Length: 242
Image (tube, rainbow, N blue to C red):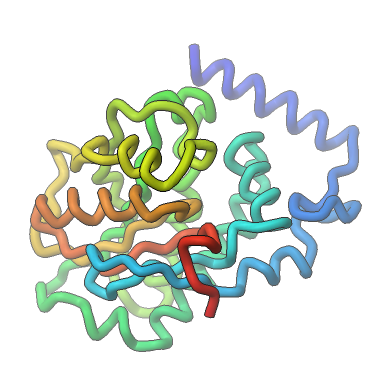
């Protein structure tokens, strides 16, 4: 039933797209999906402290403000799936920059033939039902594809699940409320085998860092080796732009 409703909604939106001209998701500039100026805002890396990861920090494509915020809300909350490609491209650029800096390679564990696992941060069951899909899958695939194209072995792994979360993550109250909502709700799937594997966590928006921190802890307890987290945007009050 959920899949049928989601399919019907997609068809309606595709027909609307043929009839009504669309504008840039970030600024409404006519006849473009994401204009060059708004796309450029997703190439301004934001770094966040993330001591639970080997690199000690997480990276985002840009600050969660203005056009970036509007773009991600259109993608996440209004099912603008056409944005999968430009957002995946933004994460691919960030991944390539991470590799060019040399830090990722220097932190890879010495496990023979172990691919890098690209693990999407999990959504709550309620969010999955509402969206009709795991929205991070296409951008996680873009990260894995970039790593592969640059000579590393990488695969997307749906190793994490979220249980018992309430409400919408970005809309939740303050930092302490966000942390209490996420704490203990993220776990590794029982069927996942992570021992010794290097892992990149992929998320959409880093607000307080609670989600990626819980991801790292769950993966570490399962024997994995979380390297860092990559996100599309980060809330500027928690992070520094470099």
